[in-house]
Length: 403
Ligand SMILES: *Cc1c(COP(=O)(O)O)cnc(C)c1O
Image 1 (cartoon, rainbow, N blue to C red):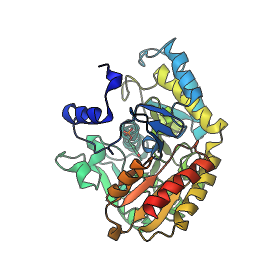
Image 2: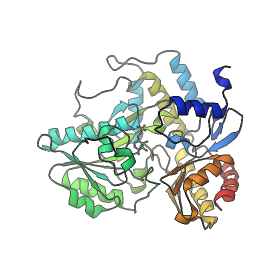
Image 3: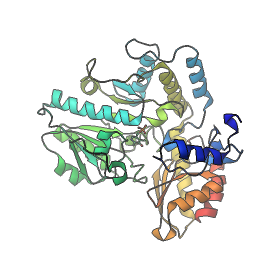
Image 4: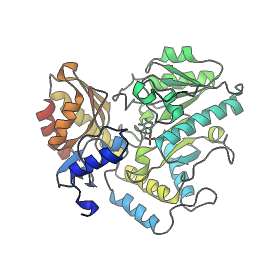
């Protein structure tokens, strides 16, 4: 038997035996994908309504991104930053242009970009703001999700993410999300940064009140604090703008990016900031072997081009509105509320309806893949290349299951 001939059940069993159990996947094996569609080894097709947690905004295997990957693989893949390569500068210039920031620091995963932002804020605090050694504080929010490193989970409020992983990194003040008064109270002379998700994706697509980010911008300005916005999940057109902070017309000091920056193909992440902020790094003080690798850079350049050329921000805005209207129009007695922005949508189920997992499992059986977050919220976040017709098709199934 060749490896391509395993059945879904065999593969699930094999993973269960040989893979660590740090995830609880829906019982579906994906062996092929194109656009919004994925397929299992038995040939059953599903619409992907998760997009790998918004890492596949451009759709699975977008031809322009796959071409960039293949072309680059034929000439150069990795140099490390011990040498220059001919793709990282081009990618940096492009990402600088789309973010409106002067400089980029490239990493690979979202968590690494978040770590980079934390280091940037601290280093800026000591070098520029003049905070006393080892006293820097960063304000973060309850129910945050910024990744899985030991430092990042040190300021998580999710017991599952945190338990048994201590001792924890100090230097973080956790305040309630969407509470500007709490942020003001948490500011001290040692505060160097505020780090925020413009919409809390993992918490269940929690959308703050209008004016929240603006308020954070003001607090940061008044107290000489950096504002870092984690756009790893909300960025790259997911919420109907290139970046979610643009809904409020603010300009953050640090933009943290990942996921869709790699076009669903390759892990590419990074932070963008102006020189007065990112300029604090000197050679040898931070880095990554794969950060800025030519293969990732070529993919990311193509991934950004697809978002811009196909106008995926506007598509996300229009289709997100349409999708949310359809979900609300079901008037389902199982649904408490539908919330979101663009094609980042959370359906909060009534507690009386039972666990969200029951519904994501039923949706899967009928050909729609999405994932519950917490026990009672279903997130719908399809690739942004989805069409109105696709949404109508999906809604027929969603109505059968959630209606
Ligand atoms: C996914 C995510 C991260 C972490 O990204 P990884 O690539 O999984 O390390 C950080 N912040 C947010 C908001 C995310 O959604």
